[in-house]
Length: 403
Image (cartoon, rainbow, N blue to C red; front, side, top):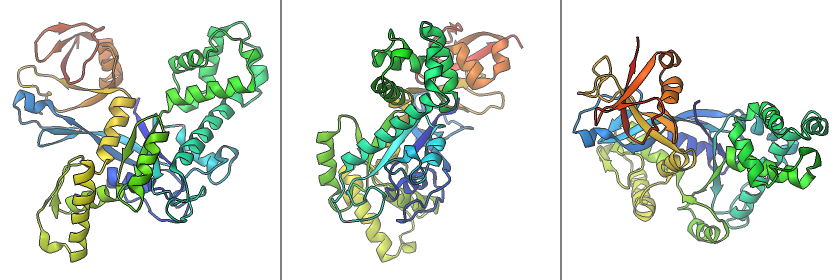
């Protein structure tokens, strides 16, 4: 199953700029609220240290790219319409926003850390809005949306059917939530975290339902907070204040700076590896005085201060720390680490931590191969590994089948 990162936040907070910076897309950017109506999709990349350096190989990636020993593996991003208070009731573009959101696995909440946007995303003065309040209202809206999904189509009649059948209740609840990308294990964990695993659903109060919806949302669609526009005005002041209030990771970020660097790099004007704290200007003569000043400010105020623009670190954290993915390299030839076409380390595949080899073959390689699977071989040690082998990060695996 493909992982999708959803980009969320108030209108005009910088969501589309973040998408454009991460994916080099051309989503329309404006300070006018609800510039984004339909979701914008893009392909970004996570950055990992490629095993080619460890093995002293010149690799030839097919599903990804390798730049100076950094493997960039594609992931999917989705920028949805801005969220406003009472979105779960349909206010703003709430219904459309939340339906689009159902496809996402991890959510990145883009905050205008300067506090310059009111609740509807209209620009006001710096510091007139509290970023912490944006976090609270947005999480509340999504939790209430989950509650609505639970209660649709006669909730009371639904839960009376399972008063004494917890197992059946979980199965039917899973079917009820099938459009929101939720696993049965998520439901079981949310019941446990809500202390409702031994409570008959027919006796749940409104508070119980909301608590369960909240826990289920936290498990199935966790949110990562991004303090965007960190270099603007009172951004750093508001960022430090927010860290004292919010109990969780907050990433400082300048999506606009990343977009500037990526576009100049794309045009060959400078050399820049996403996630780096430096860049090299190659064609200074093509830069205007204003553009040179912009790059100088990016270097001094962002890269030197925060060690990066933040965009790459945010994507990596979302995929590896929240979605719990690891990287596996399948090969066909053990001695030279190639596929059948002599491509060296051709594919770097993301898979959830805890995945067994047989499931990796079925879900990530080819379902038909799983039917003829015999065993795997660890390409480093040349040792045989069975179908219940627990994959590790940076494993290089050869799959042996009967065909």
